[in-house]
Length: 69
Image (cartoon, rainbow, N blue to C red):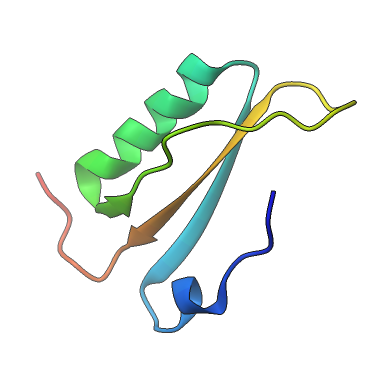
């Protein structure tokens, strides 16, 4: 994956989340759960690293807002 951009961490409450799982369905489900609670810039694809198991996904969260019920 590419290095994390400083702009994504420029203020308290901004977070970069990297998820690793066995398959696309699992990492996309985790991203969906995060998006149900916080403002999320979702990833539109997963990545695979040669020689490493599973897939990875990176998404960006803004946790400064109140949690949704």
